[in-house]
Length: 499
Image 1: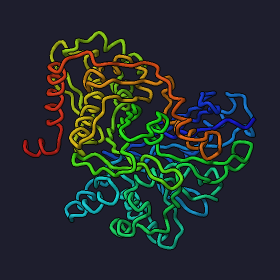
Image 2: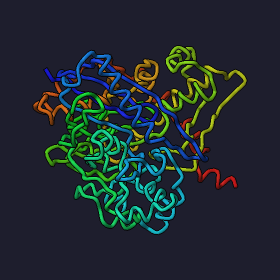
Image 3: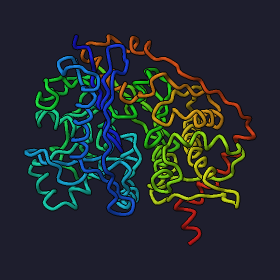
Image 4: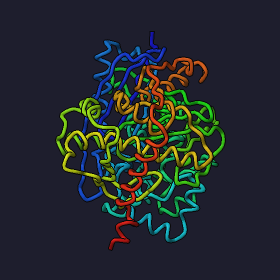
């Protein structure tokens, strides 16, 4: 029976592929890490061909591990790191520059210029996004302005742009399909989320030729067919969805008011707002949650740049631990009254601060501070940043009493309990925390006919553990006040005042 779904989960530090059966059960996984490149301060790049090669190798590994034949795979779904930007030659499929990663800050000054010109309101009204180097548009423009002959080649229609999903689709289909979905399009800063079209005024602002852009489809659609030379059979590609939207889909957050938070490289809290675009007054993002059968559901999202990446720095940069899993036992030895704060602004601060020039700092050290306190402060930074997002959502009139969580960091029980304590909400960890890959499998399975409806998918969600608040308001307020003080000392405005 060809009832398996291959989910490609292309992330910031590794490419993964998971095989699921028709009940959403994980059959196997393949994973390959790839190099991170930091050519200048605040710059983050990937070799796009590394992304492609590790992706296809992960797919082959997952298929081999599950001992299935390629003919048994009904469909492929793709989920991906979103705003990361790739421009390639239409004839060869070869990128003309490294992929510029969503974390990259090289276009911050240009975005400042757009704000000074009074263009942020136009951009935000159309896209739901703030004028920030996080998104794809300014990255595309940088490539066109800084790579030899790129502008001229783009004007001649020789170059294609895509987010990572689009580039992988191009490679899988041997250049036959140049498409993306509405969730990824909504993160480019070129897509009008109200009209669900590429926007001519935005293209003019960023000076990007429309000929570079892919066709935008629903999340569940006929995107093309994986060439048989890659995996051993021609397999339909029937689902594409950006990673954070995919995690919400995998967590079955299909209704207005449902929320999830993913703890991977970064942290992303997404609240489904239904058919309504909710414009945040507190510097959150309005975005597309998913689009099915031409109908769009929207969300409000808060983005944190450093979560698991902070623990990666603790491990690889400071070498305080050998494995991230060690952090749980370490943190349990530290007092709940810890006054050491790590602000992980290594690539600036995301929501709700959006300060590209802020940089990481460690505060509150005393003579008895050591490895345990620094590691614990790194974990707690994830909780404090999540509280920043929760309070911004509440200030916008939203309400979250229950939060579904996923991602690699959620296996840490200490972290999940402190998250519940600080947010004062129940935290629900599902049996399967591979929600990002599962979401891609679900959208692909919908199009392929393996799932009949969202209701059917929703019935598959299963709770593993519920974490409930165990601290009082006084404890929460004291800990969070210390965090806010630490953050204030890393911001651009604070340092300018000091100058």
